[in-house]
Length: 300
Figure (cartoon, rainbow, N blue to C red):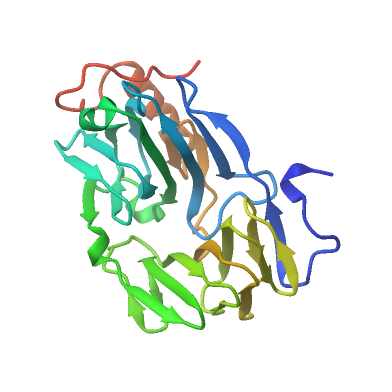
């Protein structure tokens, strides 16, 4: 059976795709689970990339070291469950990212950033777990000026209902609105379900999916284990229930306004724009990150 479509057979009518992540090495042996893009599901709304990091334990003296690298045409959304990452970028931003906080970095016409475990956490063992998503910017904003916004954990609203605790990272749900400013209609939530808990996913977003972080859930009449992304058909409310404690991520949004091309860290509606970004990075024309001397070379 295809790993990316491993799921109960046949799938319920309300379920369009089930994705099983693939392991990817980001360098220096740091492994992630790559959820999107997948062969059967390229995107959910304008979420075109989804990596699950960890949980991983770094020994003393070690940590995450993602050297400076460029982006265009997208926004990154970083959200941690454990640990801490020090974000630096070519705008001069230096921002620790801690559990529950949200980083929204707009690449637009071009930005460079690094992601590292802070020095203070390298004196002993440290843990790291979290999610990084990429959002394809609307075509009209693909060349917007780069920007960075940080929202502390206490700024993210919480919804309590039917045995579910929902942290609303992006978008609107049940009349609650996240403070995170986005470039398009999006929904992103971190949902903890108690045993017997229920989450009703409204039909207002044309594209919706859940990723099961832990536990087993029943959705649209089928059971799904942890480590699965389940995409749903449009136009109907989806009922998610947990017989045991579970945690899921909810994603949603409008379909992409045009096909997107992805190469390395670049996202664009234009192949020519990506070729230009490749040449710019190769030739050192991106603004560097202050305080950083390393960089990731253009892949060959």
